[in-house]
Amino acid sequence: METTAALLGRRSVRKYTDQPLNDEDIQGILTAGLYAPSAIDLQPWYFVVIKSPEKLKEFREFMSDVYDKFEPVLLVRFANHPATIAETKVFLKSLGGTQCCILAFMYQQDYPDKKGVIEGVSAAVQNMLLAAYDKGIGSCWMTAPTRAGMEEDIRLRYAPEHGDFIAAVTLGYPAFTPKAPKRKTGRYLII
Image (cartoon, rainbow, N blue to C red; front, side, top):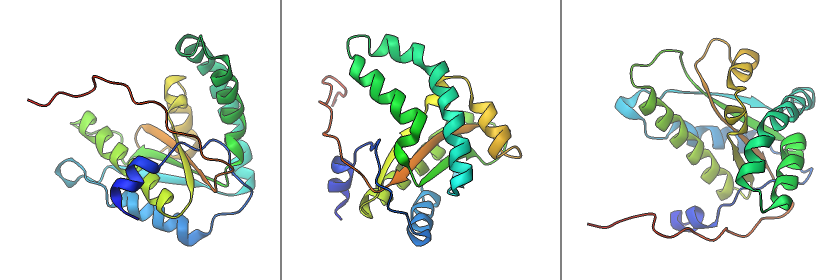
């Protein structure tokens, strides 16, 4: 797949089929994350893959609590779009039927350049999203746990020896792929 086609074609998928993901594809997606650029080559990421039905059920229950705390943000942001709020509620409480979820953390607790580390982990997440898309696998980058103030709960539950939780990514074969939202104007300046 051409890089530009992947960049412009990838969408956040919030509903998946029940087709399982194979370990080879998950490993390839993780490897793409490991090859992301990072400040002074810290490679500051740590990933936890939730794949077993029991652990996915546990994480769905946790995300249901996240939605309850995140709902006020959605009510303000999408006040004129109640359907978006309803869709987000269904997704966060069910994770869209995902077969796999990757949690992204900082590798360690203390970094002198925390912003640079967050950027590196974010680059790794983007690499994984694009690698999944290249394999025909849908994904959704979720930051709701952070916005809901529950990132420490996730860290303590899934990676207590590591640093801050950054994001979660659901993966699965898309049940449908949404259209691209309209791009906002005035987002760059060439000088």
